Length: 403
Image (cartoon, rainbow, N blue to C red; front, side, top):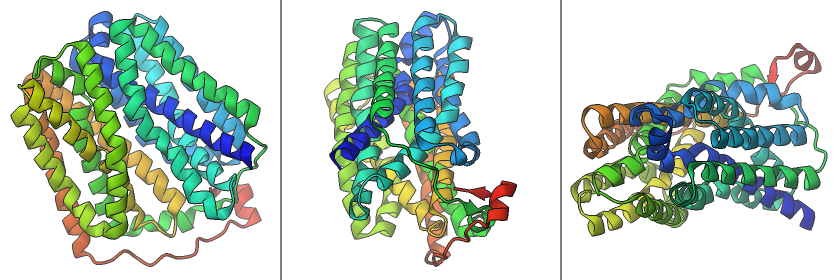
């Protein structure tokens, strides 16, 4: 039992390493732009392309990996992330870095899916939710410490040192899985039809639109966090790193707050979230040029930003309760589509209108999310959950099943 607890913590470390790899570039985009000789909007695509690949390949890669032993899947994903970080540290060519943002993105949704499922299976049933929550905490800790630490290392040591840190974390998680993770066969797979059936629901597609819009609202501005603070607030690189750390720390508290609000009243919480985010962006725009007010604005921003993940996942899950795993793959894909869209729009705003206009782009996406939520509410409560259709042996051999 104690060993399984260590495995769960190792899975959380792996999630931390993957999030640090995915989002760590946010705090070092200005350094990448300078050292690799590309425009800030071009460098921003290192965030966008990662999310786009996750969005495009998530459900399919999860399906392909469903027959592979879980330990092998986890080790392969972590190895790819460690190698990719090493490439970032060694290369001085943007095209090489760009390609090695694509490669690990293919393995990102697979690792998350397997890690969350494995954590729940490693502990008694009554502790499954807590185990999955522990693994998922790696996301928040990645934002709280992985992203700002990457920025700090790039500013005070070198850009290469920042990426070697990411490689080291993923390698450490790899060694932990190699030493501790037990043999675990793939789970029973469900038929395509029982899961794809949820795609017929208009409610689901409105929830998907809300997810895309929420994440576009979040990352159209957060994706250029360093650019905004350097160009508008005129902070140095080291102070941007401190701001990223503060942003991440309050995310932890904000995540707990939104979790409790969702337990009390999920519908009102989801409805209020985009309104609150639009207000936060108005505050960020208003106080952006002043250091002290902006410092307070960063804390408010981080507390609200943290809610986007849990709020949007909860909203989509309401219409995918009879196919939860497929619903989670849709959430991963469409949330990353939102990140891609937001990053692209944010880059256009920075290059054509200036970084000081970024909050208005985020507020516009938040209002689109609000419209989608209100339209979804007009359609009434979520559809009742159905028991998923199991896979027959013949169907399984024919390859018509997903986990």
